[in-house]
Length: 355
Image 1 (cartoon, helix red, strand yellow):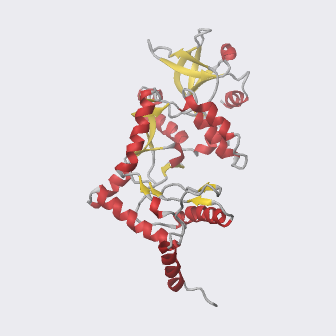
Image 2: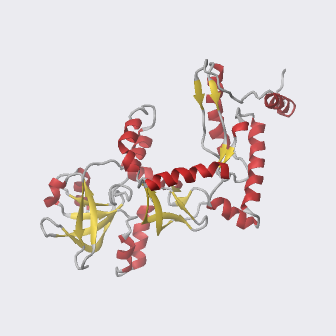
Image 3: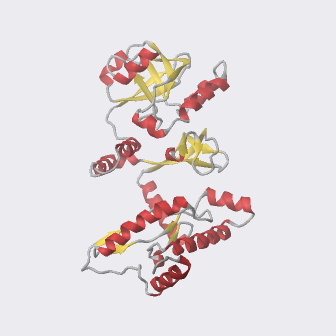
């Protein structure tokens, strides 16, 4: 053969693979098992080059393992249950089930034409009751054991998608899906007590020797395992109001010269409303929130901040110290507020020298 003609060859062999269940898998105790799973696809309706880049890499791994004798399970699924699917259906004027299933059928055909070696008999979609009933069961078990709880929290909100975004889904201050500017909004949310599993999760990270350091650092910060103390700093001039800070060095509390809040901290909006120029205040905080998450986590940014004009009272010394907002404090670490002790912390010293 001197020329590869996919229109002639691909269809023939893909039909042969399907007819022979070439990529389906059964139980075979005599062979070593290998489970290959890429992230589920969001059924937007059309596969694009981003899908190809992701799923072809997974297929290379699965096919390599098969060639080496492994009994390979390589299934596929659709991340099809959520507000994005509902919003898309509203925009198109169709029922979410109708549009979602149509999108899945179209994208499945595209992936099949690519010849990726999926065990399609094990295909699932997260919008199917047979699937999400197990999500509900797991959630109820976690709730019964006190591992799921509700509280108000500042979240990343996309006004176009009308949904909350994870920190990793905010790229340079914009929604990863539609590019709209992400805003901070305080909502009541469900949370899981991930810290209950912190030791086990951190132990697992130690085995990921081939992972990039910045990715491991992000995971460590997400897990949030730290040993320290929570201390309440009353807000000067605000009877009964306070800021809870987290510190791993309570022994240095007498050296605290200022308190620093993450720009996402819930009290930031209140300080903004009570400031002489609320819009300018909000704009400065929003600038910090829009910074690259990885850079904030790893510290690969120039440390910046501004004085809120408010003061907190050191509960040990009674001294009033200024309250700042800075780009290097993370809402998900501790309480989203820290006490700064320049004499004992290099980062605090660097920030204090600058301002």
